[in-house]
Each structure stands twice: as C-alpha cells, then as structure tokens.
Length: 479
Image (cartoon, rainbow, N blue to C red):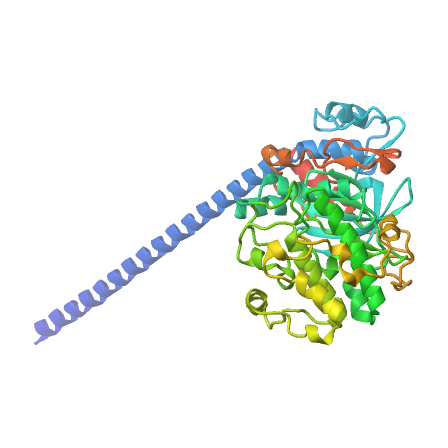
C-alpha cells in the first residue's frame, strides 16, 4: 500500500509540474508575441515620423524662395528673422543665400518692368486696404477696398486659382480661356455706361484680383424686394438693361447669367450689369455652346435641352426679370429646380392676364420657347410699344434722370475697418508652373488707372503677420 501511495504521489507531482511548465511556456509565447507587436509598432511609428519629416523638409525647401522674397518685401519680417543683427541684415544669418533685400528683388525678377515705372506705382495687393465682404461665390469673394494713391473706393473680386484649376479638371468641356473671360469682359465694359467698369486686373501666386468700380446703390433684387415699382420705373430699368445687353451682343458677348442679383444700382439710380464669370466671348450669331450654365429660374429652354444657343438666352432671362418686376413672381415657379426646369420646357407663363396688354405681349415675346422667334432675335426690342415713352438718345448717354431712388444709407458707405488680404492658400503646395501659365494674359490697367498704376509680374502672396513667427521658426528648425 505504501508503494502505491508513493507512486500516486509522484505521478501527481509530475502532472502538476507539467501543468506549470505548459503554463510558463504559454506565458513566454504570449510575452514574445506582445514584444514583437510592440517592436513592429515602434518601427512603424519611427518610419512614419521619418516620412513626415522628409515631406516637411521638402515643403520647406519649396518655400525657401518664398521666404527670401518675403524678406525683401517685408522689412518687419526681415528684422524678426534677424533680431540680433544691428546693422547689415546679411551678417550673421545662418543661410548663405540670404543677401540684402534690394539685391534679392533685382535677382528674382520682381522689379517693375514698365516703361512708365518712374511715373506710376506698381499695382499689387499692398496697393489696397480691404474693409468688408460684399459677396461670396463658388470660386472666391468680392471685397470692398480703397486704393492707396487715388483714395477711391472699389470692389475687388478675389478668385482662387486652385479652385479654378480644379473646375477645369472636373469639367473637361471648359476651355482654359473661359476662366479668364471676366477680366476680358471688364476691359470692354469701360465702353458702356450700363456695365460695371473694370479698373485693373492682376494676379499673385494663388489668387486672381479683378478691380472694379463700386456701384454703391445695392443690387436690383434687394431694391425690388424692398420697394413697390411703378410701371414707369420698370420701363426705365428695362430700357437701360436693353442698352447694356445690346452693347454686349454687339461685341460678341453672351452673359448667360443675367438676373436681378447680377444688376447693380448706382447712387443716381442707373443700372450696371455685373458678374461676367459665365459669359461667352466671340459669339457672332449662333454658337456651338451646349454647356448647361446659369441660374435655373432664368435659363432658356435651349440651355436646358443642351442644344446650341445664341444671345437669345439673354433675352429670355431679360423676360424673366421683367415678369418678376411687374408681377412680383417668377413666370415658371416650382418647389425645386427640377420642377422649375420642367415648367420652363412645358408651361406658359400663367398670370400674364394680370398685366396690361402691352406689358403682357412684351413679356410673352421675350419668353418665347423658340429662340429664332424670340423678341431680341426677331424684331427690334426698342421699337416695341412697351418703350413708347422712352427717349433712347437720352438713355444711351447715361444722363437721363432716373426714377429709381436707392437707399442712401448703403452698406458700402461710411467708415470701414481694415481687414487683412486673403492668405488661406499661403501654406499649401505651390501651383505648378504649367498651370500658372494659363493666367499669363489676365493683367490689364484701364487708361484712367494707367495714369497712376502699372502692372508687375506675378508676385508671391503676402502672408499675414501671425504667420511670420511660424514660418521663421520652421526655417530655423530646418536650417
């Protein structure tokens, strides 16, 4: 019995030791796996940090020229970068390529090249003091600004180059020339009293700037929304719009986005057609354009069906405007864009019987669905009895007394605060030189402004003061 007990006890001890060995082996395997995982994570993190640093250092290399240019253009930035240097900014600087600002400006090609550079000032972003936001769109915004020398209030339209280039890639039917159409129309607009005049246009590394005259009476949509318009007032507004449209069409320009919101008023009550971003140039007669564009409630049927169309699309939009001014409702109402477009194609304006016979006939001929029979294409708009009270010679001079009385307390007048120039694109990847070449022909200065300013080559965008220390610190880390 004793021997049996001893055997059982030994077997029990062996089983216990076996379990302990298995348990310790499992624990050691688990520990090794965890250690291996930690090592993999550590290596991945190190690799990620290394890749990030490589990308960051590459970014700083690309921004080196921009930093040197900033040094030449902003003395305050230069002195912050070289705080401990008393006399010569080039002495004691860690980077060997930094030299005094004047020498940098000459070597980088940013010096004015105009023959009149001694008599006029360079037109740059620093020329303007920005005050407030006037409007915002898909590609940029319009700012109220004052120029430094002429001390004149202007509207500056600021467009992002990056957004325009992305639109070109997404919509291959759009040509490169189409993104420059606004600056070209603004140059021609100075010949008409009924279009917003373009004072100048220039561009920087990331932005396009179109400097326009300021029509400080607000837009026609807000004026219509806040006032009841007499028939004589509607007729006067329509007559000036006809002059503006006929001028554009005579120059081969189709507006394509004519609406109440794109018609501004001066303080004297005269109209100014604006926003030429969707315009078409060199369109004599019928065009091959089939691109869907514009505001749905004002689109002509031929645009919706994507058939080739002509300047008749502007006369259809003009008819929608007159219907809206006379009846205070759209001719083709709907709960959504799809319903509005369907009604434009299939329905007739329902409430023309509420107007007098002359106005109703005028609107119905403008809203004719067949563009070849639409008033403005077939027949002379000016000879319609709707304009029987209009003296066209007086209207064309732009000096006729207007019955339109805009609000004198316009949001454009009064003292304005100073706000910085846009810089949201300043720290993004530079735009490729091949893409920059698209914007080469945008610059112009109108004859009136040519007495004061001249254009300069494309410049680097200025960076707002809060970024100065950040950029300097990054360069200190890199160098």
